[in-house]
Amino acid sequence: MYIFFIVLILIASILLILAVLAQSPKSGMAANFGASNQVMGVRQTSDFLEKFTWGLAIAIFVLSLGATMTMPSANIANSKSAVEKALEQAVEGNQNLLPSAQPTQNDAAQQPQPVAPAE
Image (cartoon, rainbow, N blue to C red; front, side):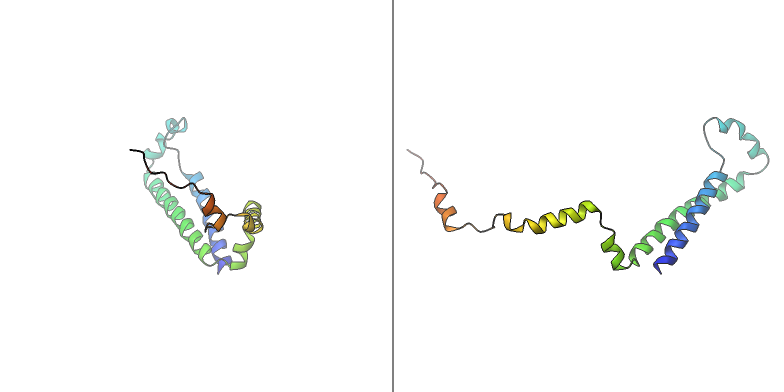
């Protein structure tokens, strides 16, 4: 199922690239030369391409979520970066260096006792 989602994402990505390239720019230097498109009735085509582009973007988002949900757990463990792995190893190796949460008898004796205010 994961591979199926990845293939659909790739197809949608290629279609999205083609849809963006087929659209006429709405501003910039090319907008001055694009006025003939509106005269010839291409307005409906640009509306379709815009809706198609948004649809493909939403489809890629949904397919990405679906691929993440169906990803095998072995791939998740292998996808950790080197920094994450080094951090986990450092935390595991330094567990004995962390101070304990409960004070010992020596710690309690070394703490200063509160002094009553002089009147």
